Image 1 (tube, rainbow, N blue to C red):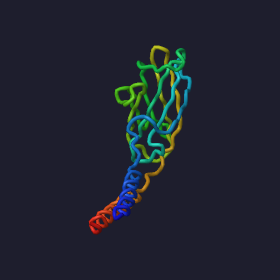
Image 2 (cartoon, one colour; image 1 turned 30 degrees about the horizontal axis):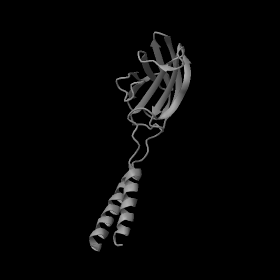
Image 3 (cartoon, one colour; image 1 turned 135 degrees about the horizontal axis):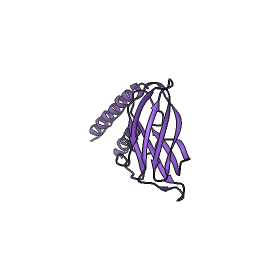
Image 4 (cartoon, helix red, strand yellow; image 1 turned 45 degrees about the horizontal axis):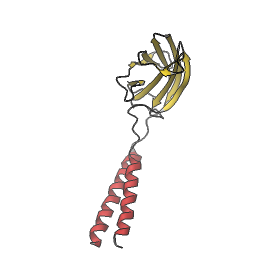
Length: 172
């Protein structure tokens, strides 16, 4: 059974590779900020991604809008706007959240530009046939994390892969 050590090394390598890749939060998901808040005639839920927002990274906001009268059935014709205010009250960013930007067309999504470290107040305005209103929440943007663990992890994975290939060829 010469292939057994090779298979074990290969499995460890593949597991390491799979866990070294950062999570992708391109659309939907993330950290729940607001859950089923009544806004005018709507029920609104809001998520932000990545879960731990860091300075210098894009911030993705997903908004779910449901009709309060219809038992939270998704509303597909609302207008959703997002404004982000810094601690001093200045507008730091704003963007419309649209279904066109969303992978799941039942949600409204927006990508906001990178923000600097600090606490921000997000104001989400929803308007449509059932009225207009807003909901807000605070989000703290953490300092940017070092990329060194990812670089070190990549080097280790390449070394493990090289070792696996070397052992495989040596045993043949």
